[in-house]
Length: 207
Ligand code: AP5
Ligand code: ZN
Image 1 (spheres, rainbow, N blue to C red):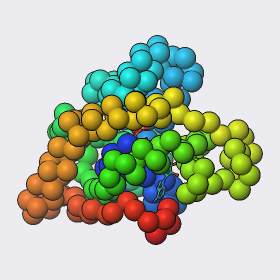
Image 2: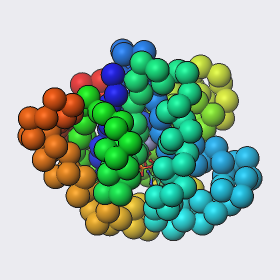
Image 3: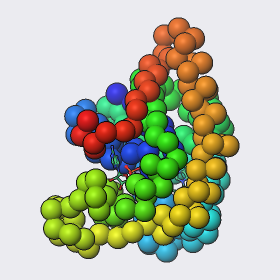
């Protein structure tokens, strides 16, 4: 099964991905996590990406498409995968169509901007696993520590309010158009068209 999780920064893509990937035994492919790993490793790509990410912008389609192409060719993707944070622009989505990467479900998570700012300001992450917490809504068992490894949790560099507002603006301009892009394909009735599902990303993490 191949799934795309679509939604604004902080909508809960990473949080819901944890449930979906376990339920369907498919790997989570988070382009954001892949870029943060490159930043941490200090690779040339990471250094380039860090500037863009810290400013709340989008990394170039070429770089992202290269990363994704390599990732989905790996053995663990044979039975499908869950895209979290990809595609994020029309050219990225079009590249999947052009490469005949058929998608079964597009799941849009819808949350309003003020809720997002509150969520991202309280977010804490475990970088190496991608596990996501919130100081109030989804706290770890021990404050500041990852549940499984006990490692220190960190705050993302791009979770400052000004950067979050910029990311929301970029989402509206460049990513939101994917809603219509996928609805149109879903409604086309073509045999390989994905099913489009929209969920309200409110309520508790497990609702
Ligand atoms: P990325 O890592 O993808 O960031 P994002 O899309 O901005 O999304 P977030 O990870 O911030 O939010 P999320 O929806 O995963 O929410 P989460 O589950 O963590 O990308 C980062 C950057 O990399 C981009 O800005 C860009 O520069 C670059 N990039 C990445 N992919 C790219 C691409 N394809 N093309 C170009 N550039 C790319 O939840 C947020 C918080 O809310 C958490 O604290 C969580 O505990 C809490 N929460 C979740 N659900 C609930 C709930 N139901 N109730 C209460 N709290 C909740
Ligand atoms: Zn995320």
